[in-house]
Image (cartoon, rainbow, N blue to C red; front, side, top):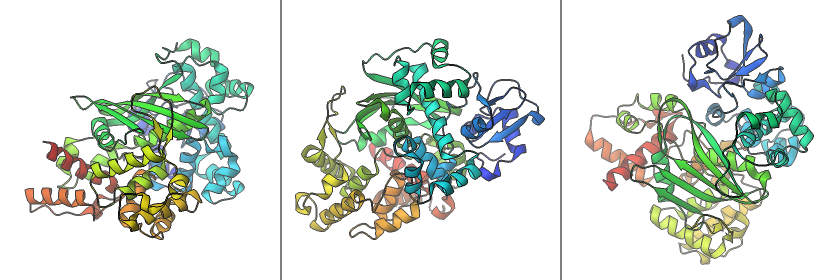
Length: 502
């Protein structure tokens, strides 16, 4: 069977049931299995006995299964899975809504705010999501809150009232009622079943990020470490390529810090990356978790990506050498945009130096428990207020940077995962000094676009030339790499950097 189900309306019963029979872990998070005879819903890889086909139905989201009256399985924990890769691949309205809901937009702005971000009325958006996903925005947000709450209950020593508000619930009673309905257990019962180890750092929250495997964490860590901006980011890479990455976060209710451990994970299925959050306001837990998931490309389907790219003779050896390579996302679209302009026509080291100067001069100081993390990256409004001549770069580029940030600060350009990608690109290209490379690099990292190709990029050209020289008979056909050209880019960049280091 295919490695992904390509659209919500195409959940094919036979394909889904085949995945359940084989306990195929690749489909965890892609769809959910509801069992009529037990009243529970499971992930496809649930180790329990396979139910008879006459007793099951399949749902695109956990919220849809809950809306149909099913409770989460206590054995396979279906909510502790990576998200569906389809949301980033298709980037439909439903997919964009799911990403914003995961970031906590409904909790902060309500359904009206979510609808406004997507360009719809709240009534039309509710109809659309119910039609495509089996649940409306309120139900989807409620499921998100319950999932966050369960993770906090089981993995931290936070008081249950703190858990309730950190997860986005408006009251402890609502929290208790929802957890009882979704998990058939009160929060206190969930905690007693899984004693939290407790954080070794006071005030920290220790969680896990679910990722599909294989996961090439060493390459992701090296990419982030090479570009880490002093004051905002810190990374430590061990001899085996594993290590950790930490950074400051500018979140809706206050600053925070995230630290994630990264390394290579093989096999086919899912694994978990240890994540530590240190937040000024616990209400930012959901947003911090969602943004770190985006940074790590946690919802990617590496089996589908690798199988597609490995069919090309040029990319096949690169994929074989680095299975599960991820496209680094980001936690803040405006920061990506600023760093993209700073990186125009200069080396990675020079761009990092320019960003460090900007942070030192205009970043907001914050107190953290991690050495080297001292500032938040300057927001768009701060950079827009600067004079172009303040930047050590050609004056035209300085004007482009100020103009871009002014557009972001005014809301004319929105760089979260809500707007249509094509519309964002058109708005970026309409700005003076923003060309295709800059617009597409922003799409690659800020918008999570899986099919970006940068033909003018120096690194891409050098990598293609190197591989072409090694085998002149190999035809280079980037068009055939769609819809995963962003991953092809990372393979080329990574192969070039590792060759230069060697």
